[in-house]
Length: 196
Ligand SMILES: C[S@@+](CC[C@H](N)C(=O)[O-])C[C@H]1O[C@@H](n2cnc3c(N)ncnc32)[C@H](O)[C@@H]1O
Image 1 (cartoon, rainbow, N blue to C red):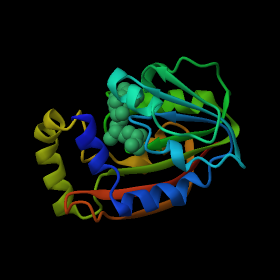
Image 2: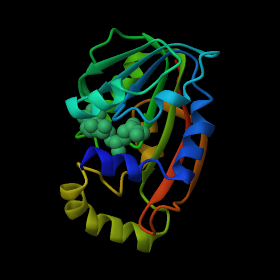
Image 3: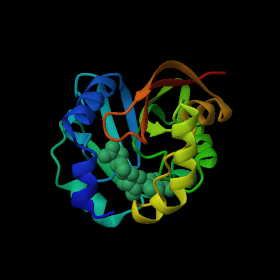
C-alpha cells in the first residue's frame, strides 16, 4: 500500500483515539514492531518512556517516521518482526499497532516479541482480526487471499488473542468489538504480559 494511503487509513479520528488510549500504557524502554511511518511517535509520553526503538522492514516508511517529532529519544531500525535484531529481555514494553495482520509469520513474530520482553514486560496491542460473528468470519476467510495482495499483506482473519496466548503471552486486558472502519473488520486492543 502507498505510504500516504496507509497513513490515511491508519489515522482516522477513531483510530487515533485508540492509539492515545493504549499508548498511555507504554513504560520504560519501548520497542514498536512495524513502526511504519511513525504515527505513534508524537503520542509517546516522555514522562513514562525512557527510550523508543521503532523497527520496520520498509525503508520508505522508516524515512517518513524519521521526519516525525518525538519527545522521547528515538532510534529507527530496519528489520522484521520474525528476526528481531535485539538481545533477549531488552524491553519493558513492545507496541504492536495494526501490524500483526501484515507480518508473514505471526507465530514467529510473537515468539520474538516474547523473547525481547523483560519478565513482567507488557505487549500493548491495537490490532484488527478475526470477527466473532461466524458469517463475518467466513467473509473474512474468503476475501483475505485477494485483500492481502492489494493491501501490503494485510490479513483480515487472524485470531489475535489466540495467537498471543499460543506464543506464551498472557492476555490480561482485552477489548474486542466490531470496527467502525469496515463491516469486515473486528478491532482487538489490550495488554498481554510476558510471565514466567
Ligand atoms: C498498517 S502498517 C502499521 C504501521 C504502524 N504500526 C501504525 O500503527 O501506523 C503495517 C506495518 O507493518 C510492517 N510490516 C510488514 N511486515 C512486517 C514484518 N514482517 N515485520 C515487521 N513489520 C512488518 C509494514 O512495513 C507496515 O509499516
